[in-house]
Image 1 (cartoon, rainbow, N blue to C red):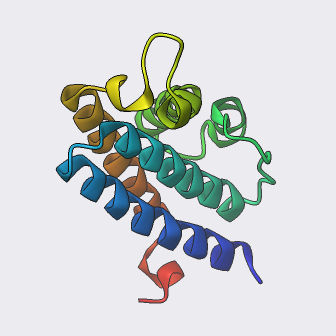
Image 2 (image 1 turned 180 degrees about the horizontal axis):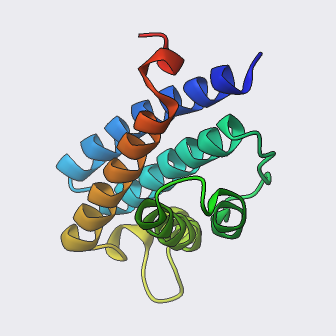
Image 3 (image 1 turned 180 degrees about the vertical axis):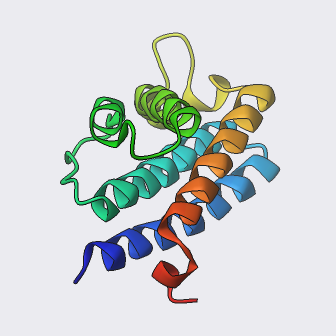
Length: 139
């Protein structure tokens, strides 16, 4: 299996999970929106790393790896947004599952914060799709 095949498969999964995030948002499940966006963004960005021949860490926080290995290789504005979002979502992952000492998960994220995260996740996944290219997706 080539790096392109792996990247395309991960991007496909990222898109499916992003659709699940949109469904969660529409149902008012904002913590699930955040959780699904985290998963989607992580898969898309790990697919991009794989496409570039970078072995990614088996952890959720990959911003440092992205910044260190893709600088100069992808658009700087995209990279900055992707690193920021990826790390923010990695930090939000556990509270979106389990809540916090202050509140249960379903009370931690507002409609506005979930909408912003969903928009950023959509941007990242779409940008990665452009980098992978339609030939890489087998469509």
